[in-house]
Length: 279
Image (cartoon, rainbow, N blue to C red; front, side, top):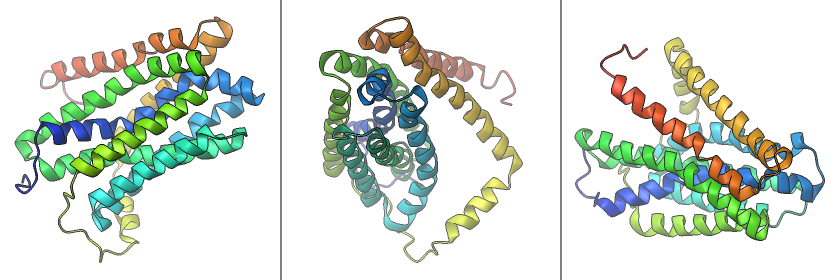
């Protein structure tokens, strides 16, 4: 049922959409900066790629935790905390004078960014009725797909203009703006937080979920597709900038092919739904 006490108009949906952008901001905005970071810290390709792989690992597990925390303490405080964590990680990354401090900052940044995607969808489920939820999720998915399309070109232009730290400064500013929007627009949508629920309950829920082999199969299918994307995305910056001697801004423009492919595949899937067996 839709929550009638909340204003779920276009402004509210816009706020959820830009909250969803925290994830691409923490990941895709940084891809054009990888070769510059490697040169600045005089480190190896393998080490600098930890600024991508470690955040992904942390984000995967934090995505599981945010839903539980929002059920226990409410959507709004957990959402605002995740944005604060994102901004703090961005600041640490911006000021890093060592590659390992940068990796630690990126870890914090990704831990906060993972909350945006999860909590935006959870809040949408709280607010919108069953008939409007599908449409709302479609808008959020579109924002999630558009994020990489704008993040990589912006990141490439910033690297060309002012160096790799400008990317992280921009992420900090975007995070603060998103936080202000969330603070003033997104109100609490979970009226009965389960504060008495045992902290161990999440482990039992995960046990039941991961014992479902059908669910596991779908998760691995999605995971393997994502692994192909992020492997290519991380390697492509070095291939384009280091080996083909293209500028970071040009790489950012070519990067648009990735989300365009994602959108094309999603469009084809939606057209085949109901015609071909979903499996």
